Amino acid sequence: MVVDNQINSAVWETTDECPLFAVSLQKLFENKIPLIRIRQFATLQECDALVAQANLLGFDAYKDVTPKIERIGITVFEYNSIGKADYFQAVDQAGKKQHHITCASFNPLQRLMGMLKNHTGATVRIASESLYGNYHAGLTRKIERGTQLHIDYAPSEQREWEVGAVVAQLSWNLYLQVSSSNPGKTSIYDRQWHPDDEKYKLDSYGYDDAVVAGASRIGFQPQVGEVFIFNTRNYHTVEPIEGHRVTFTSALGLLPNGEIIFWS
Image (cartoon, rainbow, N blue to C red; front, top):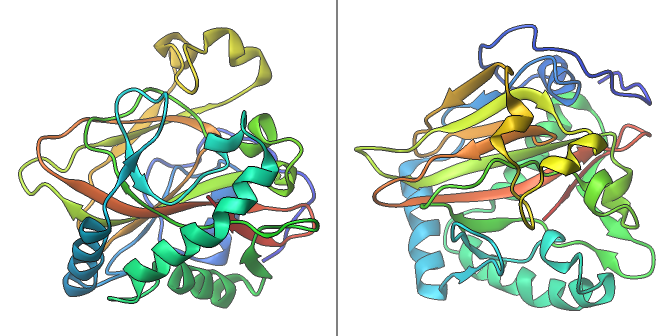
């Protein structure tokens, strides 16, 4: 994959979903396309086994996040006000919980990292800090009550962390379980966060709808076993559902040197 040191934001060239190739990944980093869809990333049996194991382990909820979102794992978002040292103290235990889940089926993170390396030839790795070691990467998550309008962008939120050095940030979600009657829709806006947008912020992560006024958007409804990847500097929201929606997810970002890093 040819990588520039700067990502040039542009309006979407198309609103169609794209398969995973080196060129489509670069376009997603550059906000030239809205999303990448990987069909049949995992089998129904693989997904069912991950969900069953996660339910046995049990979920915790994010603190100070409304509506309620449950997850197994840790995120840098949760440690913004607690501290980097505390985050890395929690990495080992979070990794053990993740292994407890994935050993029952397969490791979605390793599968996707392998795909990206094969398609791009880039260095693909877990994010790390010289004083602390590797980040945690991978959440098993329930978003069943929906989300507020928000972005996820480490350069604006974690400036003192390695992940704050990325020039573009994406999120990938493997859908492990969704309601058959209403899987819910994720909407992505062709409007990227800018520092001036902080005047629209409502609480720890949500933004007023006025920030996306007039922006085009697309929505997708996933099926079990599919992966969707999109640019999380773009504003996005998830609809509430009746039933269950479980995903395996993490962030990934592009460093100025062309490396692709993963973290949660």
